[in-house]
Structure formats: structure tokens, C-alpha cells
Image (cartoon, rainbow, N blue to C red):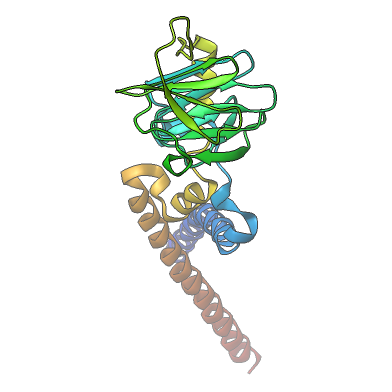
Length: 263
């Protein structure tokens, strides 16, 4: 009898271990299943085009906004440049990774000058036209201003002025009272706002789900955690099979005992 009780105690202990391991492994199975399903439908869900906005998660990944922020101000708009990203107010201007040289506002559009280009944008930030050397824009622009409703640009060697339709550029003499577009010092609120805007377009949801699926979200310990999860699943499978086999053998013993007692 004591031997039987000891056997039952051991079996009960094994059941408890199996249960807790099963609950722990279930968390990993659910995580892997959900993330796996999401990754199978990444195109349909547009996960690569959706970005993480959570501040703590961005901090966990070490996503930081650049310290150097350049801001030009016009009566209606802010032109903001941060680490090769250019914004008109809250709208990112695509394919504009050069530092801006000025912002000039007109009634129906704004003009943004880069080193070798002038961008014509709507007040909503949509690109109307990109003017370059092909359109006569001088190279090496360092300053931009406005005079008599016409854009003036300064290069390392000369001053140039365009006509009202931006079809022709001509070399001119320096103008004494020139309204140059100048940078302004950003306020604390502006820095915070554009820092969040910048960081909010860095980390894709797809990247986070991939890292969660592989365990890399937990850093250098992630793969080790996923290895432990795999071992737990193996243990759960083997222990489940062993418990099932134990029950089958016990039922067979009971049947044999009944047969012997009935004889």
C-alpha cells in the first residue's frame, strides 16, 4: 500500500507539472499562431505600410529623432528638415533628402528650394512640379528669397531671378533690401511634435510582428526564450503521450483483473 500511495503521489505531481507547462506553452503557441497568421496576410493587411506609434515600443527599439532640426517659416507654413526627411507642416515631401535652402509662399502654391532644385507644392503639400537644371534652375543654391513676387536665389557665384511662370532664370545684380527666407529656432512643442512625427514613420508593424514571432523583440535573450518554449512544447508532447499511454495500460490492467475475478 505505501508503495502504491507513493506511486499515485508521483503521478499526481507529474500531472501538475504537465498542467503548468501546458499553460506556459499555450502562451507561446497562441503568440506564434496569431503572429504567423498575421505574417501570412501581411500584404492584405498592409502591415509594411502601417507604423508603430507607441512611445514605449519605439523607445524599446531605440528609435530616436535626430537632434539637428532645420525649420524655415513663411506666413502660412513651416518647412521642417530632419535627417533627410522634409515636411511641409505635417506632410512629408517624398524624394527630397537634400537640406532645404528656403521657403517662399505664393497665393496658390509654395516654392521650396533645395541645393539644385526648386519644388513647387500646393498648400496641402502635394507636388506640382520639380524644377531642376533642365528647367534652367541654377546649381548650388545657398539662399532663397522673394522680390516683387518673384523668387530670387543666391549661389556661390551669383544671384538669379525667375519669371512668374518659372520658365526662365536670369542672372541679376544683388538686391539691397532682399527678403531672404531664414531658419527659425524651433520651440519645445515644435521639437516634440516633429520628433513624434519623425519616429512615427520608422518602425513598421510588420517588423514588430516578425520580431515577436522569432523572439527578437526580447533582444539578445529572445532566441533563448523561444528555444525554451520549443523544449517545453517537446516536453508537453512527450509527457502527454506518456500520460495517455499510462491510462491505456491502467485500463488494460483493470480489464484483466475483472476477467480474473469473474472466473
